[in-house]
Structures are given as C-alpha cells and as structure tokens.
Length: 100
Image 1 (spheres, rainbow, N blue to C red):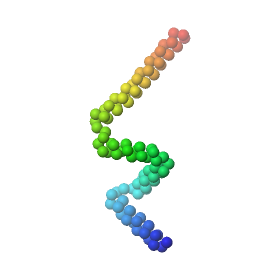
Image 2 (image 1 turned 90 degrees about the horizontal axis):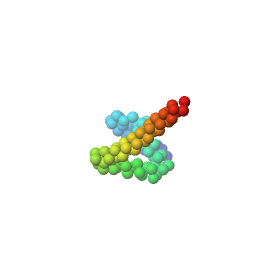
Image 3 (image 1 turned 180 degrees about the horizontal axis):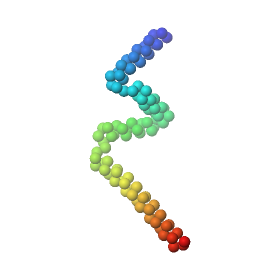
Image 4 (image 1 turned 90 degrees about the vertical axis):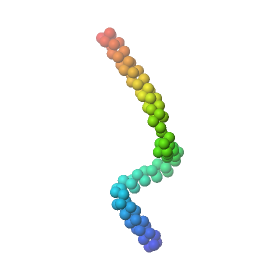
C-alpha cells in the first residue's frame, strides 16, 4: 500500500513537471480528460462518432470543395427558411392592415 502511494506521488510529480514545461493548466487538462471519459462511458456511440469525425477532419478529409458544398447546403436551407418566414410575416401584416 505504501509502495502504491509512492508510485502515485511519483506519477503526479512527473506529470506536473511535464505540464509546467508545456505551460498547460493541469485543472483544465484534467477537466477535459474527465469530460471525455464521462462522455465515452455514458454514450460510447456518440464518442465513437465524434472520434471518427475528428479523425476525418484532421486526416485531411475535409477539403475546401467539400466544405464549400456543405456550406452551400446549409446556406440554402437557412435562406429558404428565412425567406419563407419573412414572406409569411409580410402577408400576415398586410392582411391585418386591410382588416383593421
């Protein structure tokens, strides 16, 4: 038991030295690791999907052409919804003005 305590203290001291060299705040790093671990335990499928997406992007799979296509699809969807809502509002205001 005493040996495991010494090993743990050694590991903590070693990790603290690494973090000081890298300039990483240990609380933020530990919080990020804990959050990732919790996500993986609670929903492993979501964690796997997130890891695959990150690997795809970091691996160069997200080319400018593909990114532009995704942006155009999202933009069209947003624009059509915005135009529809705006036209509905204008029509409703015109109807209310003619009745009132």
